[in-house]
Image (cartoon, rainbow, N blue to C red):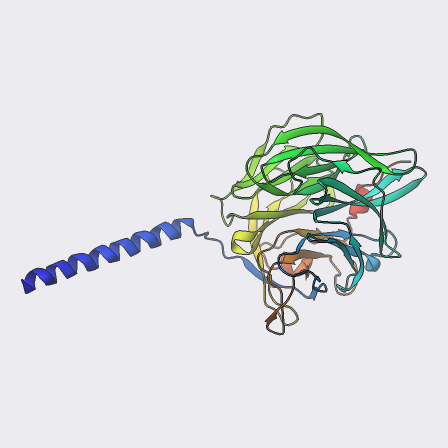
Length: 379
């Protein structure tokens, strides 16, 4: 009987070992082989007033005359829009409801005036919110002609597009069920901005992050649990889509969140994506077939903590000031801490050259190409 018991123990031990090995093999099949480059944030914004998951998406506005006066507009998705200077200090709060994603475009013709616009998806009213920005006074002024209501069940992700072909401005807005709308923005006689829906299409399952390439005419959309899709951004084009990367690709895991574009001359540059599932940021070539180049993560540094659970991101390439001689990458931090203690969420900024030089084949550093000029509209 004792011999039988020892035999049974041996069988059970082997079975457990085999099971653990099988589980580890399964896990390893789903781990990504890339080791992301580590970078540190050097500047962070003031924490948001709202508790919990409140901050979501940042957008950087470039001052037309003095880049050091450029601003950051961020969403407090529980209350409204916040404006920060390049030191991360809050200079205005606009109580506007549950604004989720925000974007910026330059040179919109409003009567005899040419303005820069800030627009966002507003979940409180299922609308598009549109503002004029006055950078010198650090102010946003609502210029919406009316409550521009979406036909989606609930607006969610959002981005703007300025057509290089027609000079027209468009807004893309999507919902959690994967539906997407495209709206053309236009000026009214009383110097407000209205919109009309020009196209609707389906992306897939839950979507949010999107970004439009104004120069090349493409729209990129993140299907959160699957991958990144590429569409034509012009409203008269078909809605055929191409897959940039999915969750079987290197370092791309669920949950895919924010998207942004680093512009350089001659159509070069990068598409960047926030990969919330492993707290990293994927980098793809902007042109051609959007080749995957690698990834980076924002870790604890001497002046800020690391970044986790990122939603929205943005990037700017221009020389702004001594802190950011080559622009910066900005990311929402889902788990902000100060002096080792958890606090409310904020945004963190990383000098672009620190990211570029972390790659074995360094990324392009182009601090001359001005996206404001890309978006110029003829009078």
